[in-house]
Amino acid sequence: MKKLLVIDDEASTRDLLKLSLERDGYTVFTAEDGPTGLEIFAKEIPSIILTDIKMPGMDGIEVLRRVKERSPDVEVIVITGHGEMNLAIRALQLEASDFINKPISDDSLAVALRRAEEKIWLRNKLREYTEDLETMVKETREELSKRHELEHNLIHTSMDGIIANDRQGNIIIFNEGAERIYGYTREEAISSIHVTQLYPEGRAKQIKQMIYGNEHGGPGRLINYSVEVLTKTGELVPILLSATILVDKGEEVATVGYFKDMREIKGLEAELLKSERMAAVGQTTAGIAHGVKNILHGMKLGAFMIDTGFEKQKAESLRKGWDLVRKNIDRISKMTKEMLSLANATPPAYKLCSLNDILDEICQLMADKANERGISLVCELDHSLPQVEVDPEGIHTCLLNLVTNAIEAFPQTASGGQVIVSSRDEAEAGVCLQVKDTGVGMSKEIRDQIFENLFSTKGSRGTGLGLAITQKIVHEHGGTIQVESQPQKGSSFTITLPKEGFFG
Image (tube, rainbow, N blue to C red; front, side, top):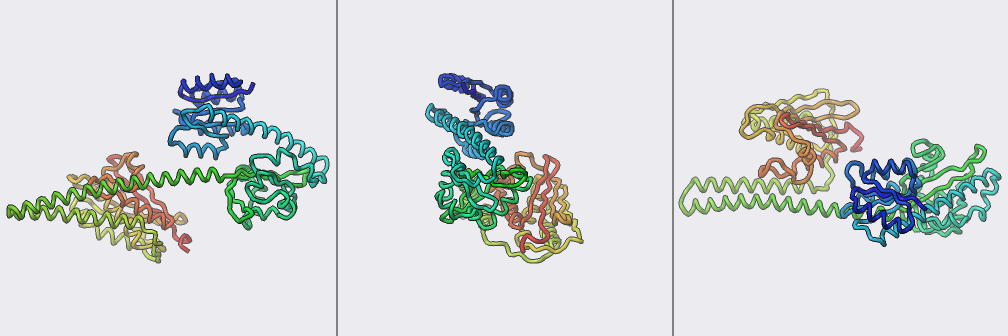
């Protein structure tokens, strides 16, 4: 009887699967977690593994990866829950046999097991045939070109495409899987297609070089390489390619490629990306609505105070009400401007300029605000810094956001502290611009969210868009932005920009 291993942290699931699968004739082993499952796997070597994808400690993805590293031929079926499609896609990319959703139905389990059994059977038969083929090649090279000995039924009924070509690039095997991918018939491919025509221009030569190299499983082999192939109609199809060179007496005689059609997986990835984008739109809309609601509340309060001032002829109430309305007009104006900046797809206007001049201008601009708070604003410039090609307005916006945030990182009632604005030349790494403060700092949880749209630690004083805009502009320049921060020890933001070559 075939051995089968079930790994799931829920005892009821393990027990139910064990009873059902033993009734179907399997010898079933169970494990409550990943490490225990791997121990049983190493001892019993089951041909099929059913593993939950979300488990405490070692999850199903790690179990799949370790199993495939040790025994690539073992078929692993992952069990997923609602909303775990991204993990299911990752599992398929790591060569999982299939995935089934919780709660597990008898039909879906039966289909997944049948597919796994078929893969095992076909792989064993294909291995037998490949061994026979290699024996034939060793016995006589001429037999390789005899089509009737190569057109074995197992190859031509494989679920994946299998294509073989001789040293001159002439196709000598083209199975049904290859016909489904490319749209050519076997007769067309063998009689009139050169192997280079199956790829975009120049790609076949690159793949050949990779097969000879060491980076992708070689030399003489290529393992699970993602590439697009060119169909009969000119469509580019994503596939996962594995290939090997057949050698006889030290001389290359043929190349065999195994093509896994990735269109279904890519489709799942596209659906996942679409759902993530829709979720992001929903979150952004909710955040904007919340911000606008707070601003409207402030304006309503201001309007009420103005009405009261007119009604009771109180100038103080009029002044306070108008100040409140004006501040909220400024807030919604700032939010609108920042939202337009974040959504702007216009390419930056690059020109050669001095980053030190931008830093110096910002320090002068923010000096009064720092002095009002009793904060020391220090400008430390590396005067050997070369001029670089940037969008001056964009970089000015980035640095102004960072310096403003640094000054506001100190409690309103606090006095003292320091903000250091600096530049330095990092040779080949580029130029670095840094804003460092001795303010309240941030926890790891806050650090992980600061570049998200509409996330703010300033309450009603912030729009939550400043750092998202800063990151967008830096990335448009081909640069990076990094943050270091600890609670009560301050924060440091470092922008690194390339000196040349990114903008052409």
